Length: 273
Ligand code: NAP
Image (tube, rainbow, N blue to C red; front, side, top):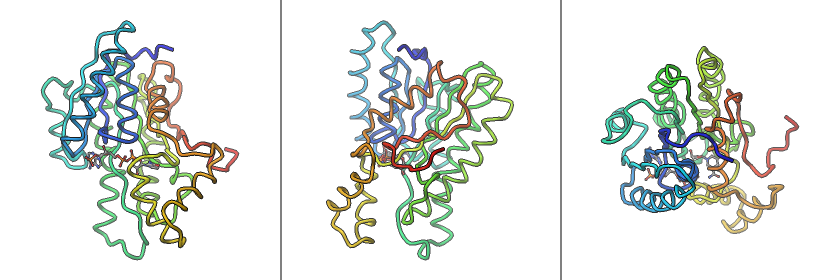
């Protein structure tokens, strides 16, 4: 299926690996020009180099080879975002697609988190996506097309005890998006949706598993096996399949979907709705 977005410009946060990389890749393979952001320049450049090659091969399908630009900055800072808007060869703030994403907050016990820990989590997982939306959404509306996808977490629907910072900060973003997505921009071709990962095999899960394992008195390998057995699909997801869902939400075909929280979790969430 042609997603109808070749030639558009996408900004993808946290794009050097994991879920952000999956989204950047799926968009680039649809002919979308992508600005990839992460802090570590070396890993980011290596990911972009591979993607440029893959996208060039895929472009033989009929569209122009997309541009893939990297910006090695901390997207949660104002200076980082300024660097993104000003990157040479980029579209300024005139993005058609924005995938908001950065690392998740650390796991732990809520008794140990002080105000600073909360502010950091809220900055990264709530205020940064809101700043990115604020900067780009009116331009999208003026041009009559826009897609914003926020990578949040299944923890928004079913909280995870050791991820209290994530449960809280992302719920704030979810509430904001519920309102903003239904504002005037909904009639101007702009959609805002949240894509909620369950358990995906990325560095993030490798970082949170030890805390969960310790809490339950298991080894990391035992914990991994327990988690996968609890997922109806019987496995963790992978970034490529996450990226494919993201690209669909960014497509012309998803124009009538907005303000939604789309779970990608192999059936792990047990609710009917
Ligand atoms: P990951 O594999 O650790 O990748 C995170 C990416 O974000 C990397 O490219 C990282 O590169 C970049 N990044 C982190 N902090 C950044 C910052 N401040 N500015 C710019 N880039 C930043 O994580 P993931 O699994 O893809 O997770 C993506 C998001 O989904 C996270 O918020 C995570 O909490 C959430 N999530 C993941 C899962 C899962 O199962 N994987 C489940 C639920 C929610 P640098 O470190 O070089 O910056």
